[in-house]
Length: 353
Ligand code: NAD
Ligand code: DAU
Image (tube, rainbow, N blue to C red; front, side):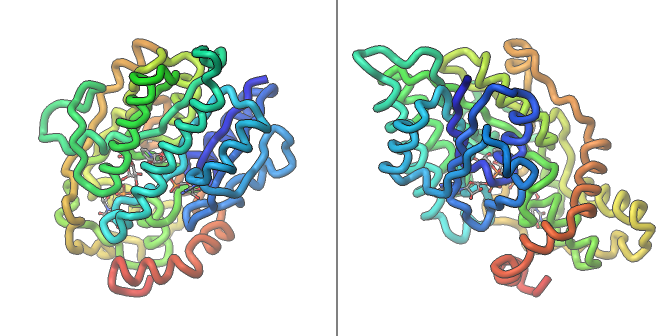
């Protein structure tokens, strides 16, 4: 039986990954270490709460003693680190926690993995540490070209700087001590369970409630959208078959300007609810994000050639599934948008939702 430490498994991608793995494999143990910050939500895992193949532990990846105790208890084969502070806007307002979790937390995980997996100069057979990183570490593209695995690391936001720093530590532990690793750098994910601060769920939620849709600047910034289940499949493939020490870029090959995404959501949602009040008059151009990257776009050739992975879900299908998921889960939406979210929204956008 393969035993995984999955960190951040109560967040958006981590919870989708746990559901994906439990569906795919019988003989598996997933220990989910999550601090349950504002972004973590155990309701995401309600459907597997009685499944003995998933063990939830509330705790911090920075906690040395706890992480070490978990290694002692479970003798992990793999660590997959999803845990992070993940929102760029929050990193601009409050960078310190991004350094703590994303940098210090990662260093604690790799240091503890080394202490447990390296014995008499031999690494535990088959062990691997997988760092879930982001295309944002490469900075911003012009009109032409794509990020490849050899694009120089040039992060612009406090968030992407913290992720880049973590990547450097992970690579350094491979180069210095021989820690078996992979780093995946993926583009913008969308799908079920995404917290309502990110572009797609925020626009769905506001439009459903006939609230204004805050588009930063001219809305012509481009992101490369990847359906979250396709990303989960890539992580599983890299973890099983990725070549030791390699970086893999994972992208949707699906670039769109933000304004296109917002207009698509308006059109699908108004059709689905038969509600003419959901229309483009809701769009409100607001002040641009500081240091806003203009374009991300991933060249997924390496992951395709080496591992046979490609993004399977067309955007037209993925966005409809995503909109339907938010409409079909009003209790989840109500829960995540109550309490602290209201204060966040008011501070961020200068008005109550
Ligand atoms: P998320 O914010 O939805 O979830 C993060 C999870 O980590 C939450 O459950 C939170 O409680 C947990 N967490 C935060 N700090 C922790 C700590 N100190 N100890 C333990 N748990 C902690 O994030 P996400 O969107 O699911 O992203 C997951 C990973 O993928 C992150 O590393 C992120 O940088 C990366 N990533 C995300 C995207 C995207 O589009 N969402 C794209 C590329 C890379
Ligand atoms: O590229 C991968 C990254 O994608 C991940 O590493 C991050 O964890 C994830 O949050 C995401 O970062 P972005 O900054 O690209 O995602 P966000 O959803 O915050 O914003 C997407 C785009 O939409 C970006 O250009 C900013 C814009 N935007 C966002 C919000 C929340 C708006 O115009 N209005 C908004 O209200």
